Image (cartoon, rainbow, N blue to C red):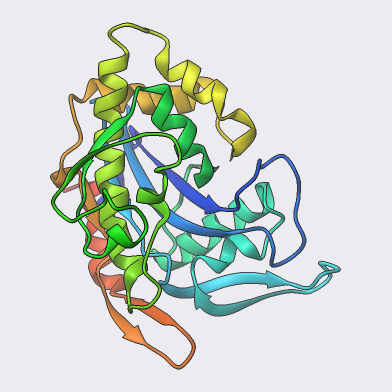
Length: 276
């Protein structure tokens, strides 16, 4: 028997491939795809974060509509498309929340935040660069410095580290998650270092990207998430989980088949407590 831990909040975070501000609604299908999907477990009592990474190509049931938005139906397709079938703002985020909740067997998500991935360039420079170790083969095609095993300090438009994948090969969206995990881990370290000279660095970062994000949280709430991540000391690989599953090649595209039963156990470990 399990009971939801009231101190652990579930926040769905999305990195959207849209390449502009998030201030305008978009036409159906043109709202951008959610290339980075992370479910944060924020323990508000212990001030810690755990992150469940969800592959963008996970096949699941998503809500769809027509251009007139008079039809409301669902279809089984890649999770990333749930964002595209919305308005590029709250509607897209709500689509993603609904889809992830169905994928996780009805688990309730508390809040959400979506950010355009182009802000990574600004975020890099705002903390004086982010030092990462290149985890993926073949990234030197995008940037000569991105040789697997190299340590590189990312500046400005080297946001390609977070976004790039070699589409000539299968399952590169899945491997790109290693790059995203490395960036998240090292960015928290960079922010923590920057906070020694700017105690308001977290607030300043969020103010800087305000037009590039959509959230149903208050400013105090999302700043608190970042502060908890810093207060925890540092994120390590043990703080990251991935929805279990298997890759599959289809005629149209690569897909990921989630092992929902195995995912339930991770959800229980992160968000619930066992009762007698």
